[in-house]
Length: 399
Image (cartoon, rainbow, N blue to C red; front, side, top):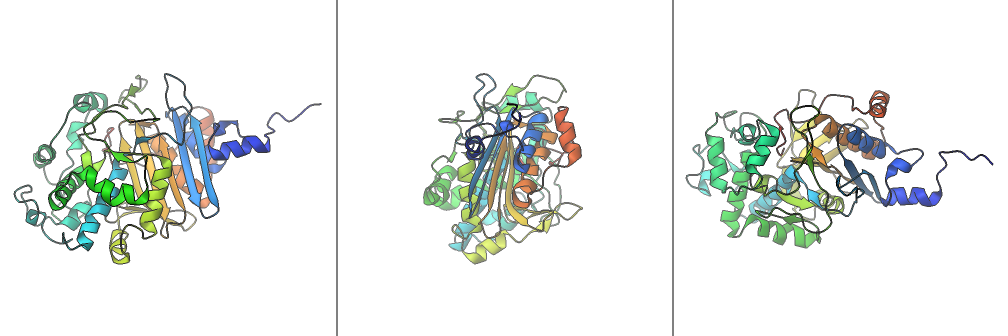
């Protein structure tokens, strides 16, 4: 008897949703899987997403987490989350504000005398990227692979990174406008350490990781390895057709409190759900955090205090952060009530089209919208359609 070649058993479909087999085997890929496949077509060796809602959890994976061994992408594996770290830093800082140890509109100079040359820069300016401090990574990663190799094993002090920023012209006057800069959250890390009297990683652990039971989340600096089962990251060079660089092992000392946390998709779901659900900050602090201003001409992307907001096509707004660190793209977002959460990761970077495709998991998960037909057609031919939805200064660095 002739059977349809695309028939899929209920057991296999269940395994696909559980993330135990690559979803490429599904006869009718879900919108999320289509977005992940588009990220692979654009140059990511693998990708995965975990979507949690009151009705349950769905995990989808495609591709490999290790090109050398061929090990399949695994939702239990740890990876570098890049600038999603900034939201952890913001939570700790706002906890300190709530405790009366820091004032949001006080000059940074009050807490870190002599670090910044301008008394007008406040803690709020750091959290909202409105300090005018230049992003030192622009010059550091002007050339993607050489820039990365120059810092892969280096250990920087906070002040050293701030000094790199201060050598560059200011982007704006303090408070005058939004200009994304890793420098803001490096200074914020210094402030957290000064006020708490403990390393920033210990502050994260005591105030966020342990209270939420995030057992697979850690701040690793200056160690270079990702402990346990993990995803390997691959950096694209600037030259088209050049070999991918395995960028998994590095100190991430160039980012520290702006980008050195390691996590999993499950822990990121738990973190953003808890944050937006009010478990980490009192309502008045959370309201401040989600009070946003536009950062794009279209008025669909916004930034608050260490938190992005995206307004999706179905009318849903989601809050969280994007992350890029060499070899990894990450999205971690939840609805305002924290009841629906998405975490997605692709193990590549310096490939804007792959990041754009991965960002499609937001529309796919929260709105059920599949990538456009044109993008799917391009995926079949091995490309990803559409402009890169990334910070144009990315150059393989964190954002």
